[in-house]
Amino acid sequence: MIKTFKSETFATVTPDAITFSSVLNALAKSKTVKFKAEKCSSILKAMIELHEDDGSYDTKPNIICYNTVLNACAFSARGGEAEKRQALTVAVETFNQMRQGKNTLPDAVSYGNMLKCFANLMPQNDQRNAMAARIFASCCDEGLVGGMCLDEIRRCLPPRAFLPLLADCGFDKALRQRRKAYSVELRELPREWTVNVKRGDMASRQRASFAKPKKKEVRRNQRPEKTPPVIRRPGLLVEYGSSGKDL
Image (cartoon, rainbow, N blue to C red; front, side, top):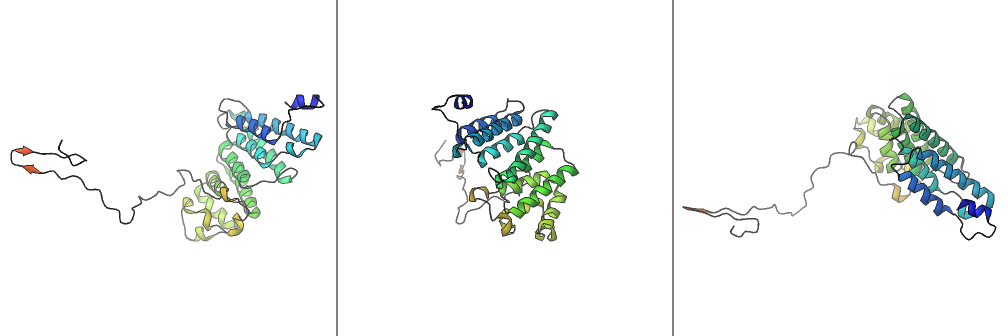
């Protein structure tokens, strides 16, 4: 489609942001394509070049395209070590391009995807902890701490380092109360940390390993279930089922 658009002066088929984002999404969700992070990055670069050539608003890369590339990087963990290293490199380059603000700026999903890349592509060590802490601190400064970001920073850091990081960023209540990492909820964080998060990105999607065990809810005025009585008579055994009728 790109070749046709460039070669024909009066081309009737023109790729736009929806076309590119659809192809990127298909690659990112694929479980069989190898080195899909690099392939998604190549498509994004082709999109940027096309936009710079024609200057059309329809071909300008949007936040969805960039976030899809980051998502492809985050889910490249099934490959070998070479693919993981390449995916991490692509993720860092793509995120840095977003922070330059040439075409778009990172949002809450961008920061969440970047932290997911660290958690999925890097082993648990001091380097991963330091990189994740820097990204989270920048996210707090930008007011873009959404539910995904909070969940992924918990994955990146060991429990003993999570609450001190919150304290270093300005929220020390949980550390002073000696709470568990999973007990920190998005709604209790400082307002300036979440001020620029879209409503749809506010919901916390806590994984089972972080979510606090839920108690069984008991509704008010709820009558306990009664089991049908069993009436025993001399020489006769009568059993009742759940419907209360004779069996």
